[in-house]
Image 1: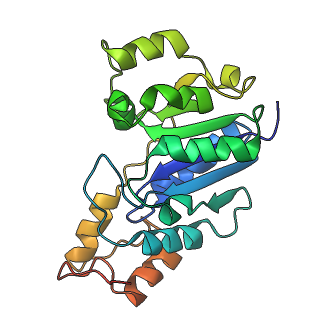
Image 2: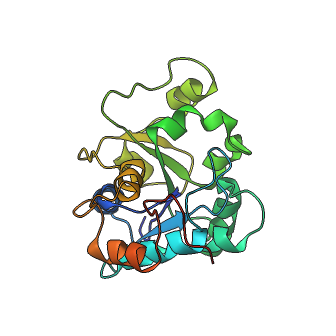
Image 3: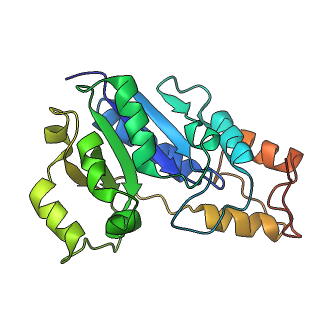
Length: 219
């Protein structure tokens, strides 16, 4: 089955090389035709991002320029209300058709809280879930997410044969980079070079984002 698509959601506040490298490894592992970075406008499970969704999407577009398989999907910026993943997956499934393999990429921490997500039990009817493991992380041992892992868990190569319904935990090359650390560096007046693309750093400087005073540019 070909033409596989993955959705990589998050706040990307700001995007960094950890996001980009993980996306590239998954693109190759899953033989993806496209990977969609999907910035959340109003993340329902965490505090509001430091800068606007438009700024975060613009930084993403700069960061992925030159990789033809990557794109920035702004649908959650156009939709009012919390950025629920299930709504985006519903839209994508209608666009892609019933047979295209569709993956939703999420972090290990997000997987542990999956049962708190809006309409979480419907996610696997629309896509496969692929959780990126991190050092020291341990999967849930009991509760609904643990049951889901037992019932739907499968290697990535097995998921590729079907359009949706499976769950995979994938270990990638460790990337000890975080958006939180980048924001902290910039707010303290220190450099974040080599943690995120220079094009992103230039955008941050031009728009006075994550400044030392803690102020952010408003649109």
